[in-house]
Length: 48
Image (cartoon, rainbow, N blue to C red; front, side):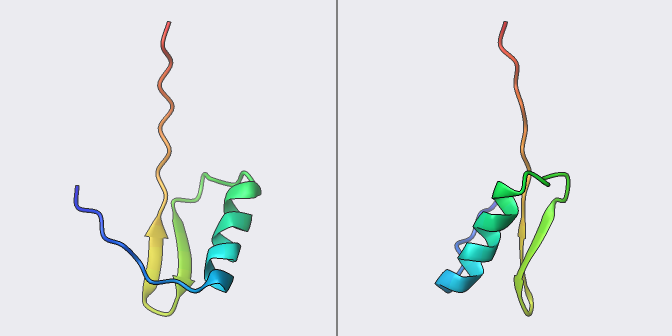
């Protein structure tokens, strides 16, 4: 998969961090601003 960096100001990043802290990560898309979004995918791997 290709990953690209984003240019975001501190206000936009604060909203993203608040989004993460809410624990509502069933949503896979977080909109940073016009024409920008960040895809969030978390995977849990259990090691026994």
